Structures are given as structure tokens and as C-alpha cells.
Amino acid sequence: MRKKFIISISIIFFAIILILGCVKIYRVYKARQCGILLAFDDYNAESWEEYFDLFDRYNAKVTFFVNATEPTDFCYDAIERGHEIAFHTINHIDMTTITEEEVYIQAIKPIETFREHGIELTSFSYPYGAYSGELNDLLLQYYKVLRGAYYYQVVGKDVMRHGFVESLSIDNIHYSSDEEFEKHIDSIIAELSRNKGAVVGLFSHAIGGGDWCITGERLEYLLQKANEAGIQFYTYKELQQD
Ligand SMILES: [Zn+2]
Image (spheres, rainbow, N blue to C red):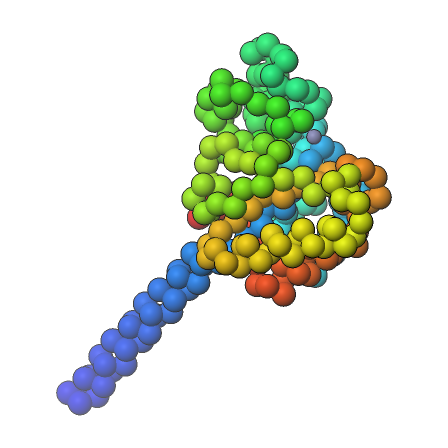
């Protein structure tokens, strides 16, 4: 009887040690995981929705910074598929040119409207990447992350969780050929792989052939190469919740 008891206790003890070990390994793995915060700005629901299956194929969760007065069917569909709905003002307005009252209407009041419809907005991207220190101070009372649109910034996940963060456009207009785009993506992935736990913000608009879009082929190249390198696609909200 006593022997059985000791054996049972030993099994429980080793099981606990094993579980704690696995938790620790998982935590270290998670902290060292590199990532890309891929985002799409403005409102291009039809174009974006067409690529939901492609995102799924590469297990890529992305953030859509939308211009909208209230949540649309697209917003609910995107959340259902694991993506984030974030905000980009109602009318795509340059925030540095408007009054505080207009800032409230364009960027703060919609948080309430979306919340009433079941969507919690916690990330915001500045139209045209135009911001100021005063705007940051005001908006950070309501949003966790404010995203710019001009720079390539490889940072630790903690930096991406709160405050103003930069992001780089990978729209077609910046590349003269697919080769140039691919070379750029290869160099970003190589840099991420050298910096354990690092993340970078990249964004585009619609998916297609226009200047301020990314072609479907280029998007797939990015998803595929990141996947092969073991780089994860995070939404902004996902990092905020960690
Ligand atoms: Zn925009």
C-alpha cells in the first residue's frame, strides 16, 4: 500500500517537472520567435477578402487599418478569420491639419461606435503617416499603438506593444521590378532571422497592380519566404495581449 503511494507521488512529481519544463521551453521559443506585422490600410474590402484563403494557407494573421464610420460585414469576417480590425480615421484625413474637435470625431468617437458593435479598436495608423507629438499624447489615451508610415524599424516585441511605432510601405510604387521587391524581402527576412525575437511593421493598401497596392504574386512571395524562415505574422493586437 505504502509502496503504491510512493510510486503515485513520484509519477505526479515527475509529471509536474515535465509540464514546467515544457512551459519554460515554450516561453523561450515564443520570446525568440521573429515576426512581421503585416497591415493593409484604407478600405479595400473586396480586394482583401479575395486573399483570405491565401493568408490562411500561410497561417498569416494581418491587421486591416480601416476608414469606416462603423463596422462593416468585412470587419466581422476578418475578425472571424483571426485578423485584426484597427482604425485609420473616418475620412482618411491628414490629422496634423485639423482641429482637436475634428480629431475627436475622426479618431476617438469611432472607438465608442465600434465598441457598441462589438469591436474593440486598439491600434491606429495615421493617414499619410502624418503625426505630431501632441497627437500621439492625445491618441495614446485611447489607443495602445499608433502606427506611422515612413520607416523600416526592426524592434523587440515590447516596443511594438505600446506607443508610436513606425512601419514601411511595400507598395508596388517603391519597386521597379519583382526582382527588386524580392531582394528587399530577402534582406528583411535575413535581418529578422539574425535578431532573435525581433519584429518589423510592413504595410500596403489594396492587393493588385496599382501603385499603392501590392500584387498578389509579391504578397505570396513575402508570405512564403517568411514561412520558410519560420517567421510568424502577428497582428498588433496579438502582441498587445501578450
Ligand atoms: Zn491611408
